[in-house]
Length: 111
Length: 116
Image 1 (spheres, one colour):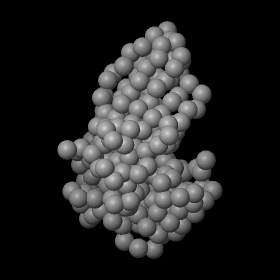
Image 2 (cartoon, chains in turn brown, red):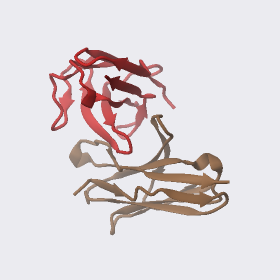
Image 3 (cartoon, chains in turn cyan, green):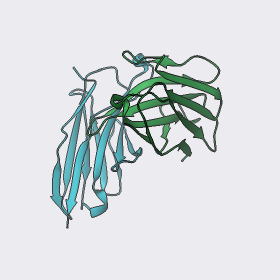
């Protein structure tokens, strides 16, 4: 079983739409969670960390459900510039804090 | 955030040659750097963890004699792909662990290697 699993998509949504991505992880001892954004042929860039209480940054909301072992990312009022691949990352001290990446979810926002 | 550079950004080489990729932390010291490989439409896969002044730790299935890693200083780690073959063609990305904590990684812009 993969450490981190994501629906690869693609998600094609119109401008202004709300879109949500989910990611599940297999290691129940995982402690830190992140969403990264990766544009085509570029390096991943941190979008936001995911906290147990959930957190929001502008149009982006991240949530963690430890019982079900999944994290989510909600994007409201989608912009064309949101088009990218969104990577879920999970780390745990019992695996040396190694970053485990999901395969990414592709989002295209259509005018 | 901290800046990590990689050089070269793109390289095309003939099969059998060796290619060296440099990863530098520009404005901070990085005792630990990581090397990842990403195939098209696939996730980043950790190849090895590079620690300054000591041998790198390789992930299972990664040949240490083929992918030579040298972390000679607190700001530089190099990955050498020896005797490259077409199946080594990939996007290689390094990252450096920041000083803010063990969960902080800053990624370089990546190196696209094409082996003919």
